[in-house]
Length: 261
Length: 321
Image (tube, rainbow over all chains, first blue to last red):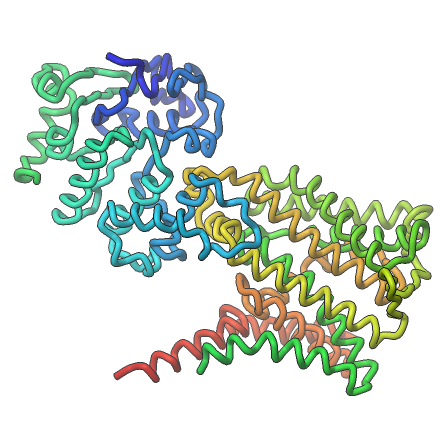
């Protein structure tokens, strides 16, 4: 396999006396759609926080395209192409949906340091922003305030904002949470087609096993801050330890919700 | 109709201000000058508070930096008013850059407390270094020399003449603030007010942008402070006091936070109100405070914000089938 797009070595993180990542080694490869799963408290969101710079790395190293990014701030990692969406909707509520995606589009184009020219003249960034809205199916809502969007649409906008930053690697933290089946299908189709285009490598944190196993090329199972299993979906599904600590309970607790598109 | 009126309003205001000294009322001209000075201060301050969501209690220090810089320059180097104003703006911006670099690392209440602490440090410095700053008396005897340009010399000694210089700077400051608000940078500032974390995850270095807007608003304060020194022929330590820092905040709240016209309307109302109340009682601060509380309480979103809502409602009624 090629050199990983992003690799973490020996990541360790403590919240007080609670260890949320313990000597964790994990890598994500270009074009491989990966899902990170595990029970609540397994360290999935912490892993994203550490890799994207949202939390400082206490021990270990993070490399992106072979370059050490461990100490880089969030914005510098985003400029390199490491982006994310949040589990809890994290958009600009009093800006329109278009303005929400315009900010990362302007930043990606290096146009945010223009102090006196009107934003309406930024036609290239605007086109990029509109394309991001279209990818998540929100083209018709560009003029609406983000706060006025439905919960599902806010989640779609959250993904749109992340996409507008032109990510090479995009972490999506429970992207389908709170979405109705139609919205979910729309988002999954977008992820699938964008992944196929190859511009963006996706890493999903998901609890919905239908989404995970229908979409992923690879699944990483975390348990108590450590990698329990890592491999193709069928391999992970058949793994006895995974079934014991997570999948067994998950499948019993939440029966299959029907085939995904 | 409402849209056309809104577009015409700035030009009508500018025309009214340009015609004002012709009425010949010296005191009214003086008051209008003070209104514009406060508006310059407030328009810059609102870039920080209204647009970016950062509450500073230290902008009096930048106002004083501009005022004293112009005073020193005028007394010891050159009395050229334009050069003096340039020095005032540069001094305030430099101080803003230095103070901002230390403050923008914190956010919310910590940011506000740091600006208060630095602001009061500057106040104490100005007050105590009396050999240099004149202490309690401040810097006095600053002349309004003619504005000499190649082939042209314009006197500004009379209040009505100086008024037009202030009007020019007022128009330039409002134009600059208007353009900043509509720019990509302005959109990022609004984003930082809404959600600084998301802005960072959009690839924008939040601290650097905070520092940029902090420095810009300090430059506006310095411009206002420098012009006040020319107006009053003196720079006083009270300019750096935190109560003076609270003035642009108050007028922004009064007029409408986060809007361009709000701080301007708020400044004009504040100066007019203070002048009227001062005629009736020596405890004018108490009177003005009560009236301001009532206005701010009654007009959520400030005077401009409330008017905007009323116009929107009326427009919606007119367009309803």
